[in-house]
Length: 254
Image (cartoon, rainbow, N blue to C red; front, side, top):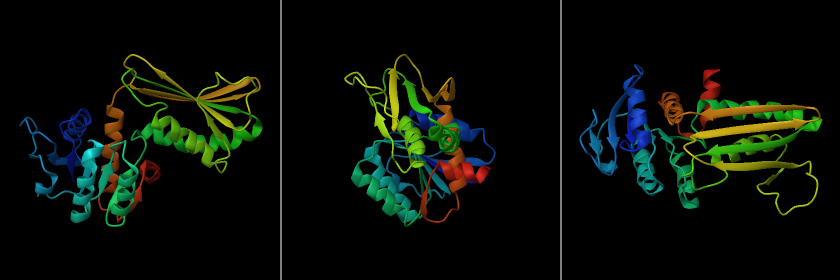
């Protein structure tokens, strides 16, 4: 049984993950960390992470950037593996993440969905075959109307996965409205749609002469990210210090 602490347990994702773990016989939620404790959780909740004295095998973090520094201090002190899902970290915090990984196992990924991370691997192979054959590459991402950043971090991760196959030779283009020329070969177009309650929809289009191949991923709820985080915790428990990502989780299951 893998014992998990949920950092940000009363947030939306914290509650999703709490429910997933409650239904998983391989994992147990032993404690939660949150700025408030309204007493509705089935496990003890600490409002100060440094006061948490519960033994665990891994901590899952879905909180806010402001809470990550203390989280990393705690994980280093306890040598506790951490699945770090909070986004929007500063450059200084990213450096601190790298430093923390010298003392304990840290798993950080742009997207926690198992499907997206499998897609990242598939795109490398597809791009290696199709781009040299003259296929143009475009990414279209769609999200709800409350999302403030564009393009999504996942869309950029998909583009990066392709670009790494070609030593980062491709330029990312987000807007062609001011340009009056044919499409250059060495570019990846990235378009963002914002509307309604779309959880997350990503299409990677390979457009060639007389044929089009599209890789699509649709998230219908935030549970897909929670499921990935739980799988990551199972993978990370007991691992030695170092930086890991969801690609490592995928590799371990293949």
